[in-house]
Image (cartoon, rainbow, N blue to C red; front, side):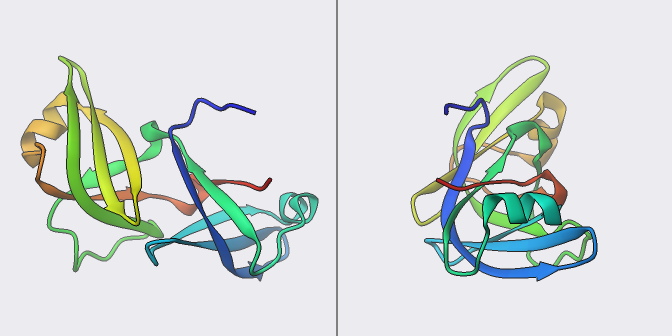
Length: 141
């Protein structure tokens, strides 16, 4: 299956915390960074998720926020991945920003032109991607 989401991060499930309705699934990427997803128990069971198995974390570019100077920030979003801007496609309304987040993983975010300008996002700049665990879809082969 091909999908429209550009952010597909392959890794290994390092933990699953089961609740009554939802499960919190952590996928550790090759770089050592982790992505946390919240999915229903039914979805976790249907996918046969187990610790140690290969899985992909999928995130739409439009659900990602970007920020700078966030290393000590405290926020409710579970996923904060920092890296270096490698490409900016600048439009009059929106911009696409690509971040190299380590381990060969590239993350794409679509934000407004005004926000990209205010943050000073240009090739070589440092930035962090922020997205909620509920925005992460899990895929398995």
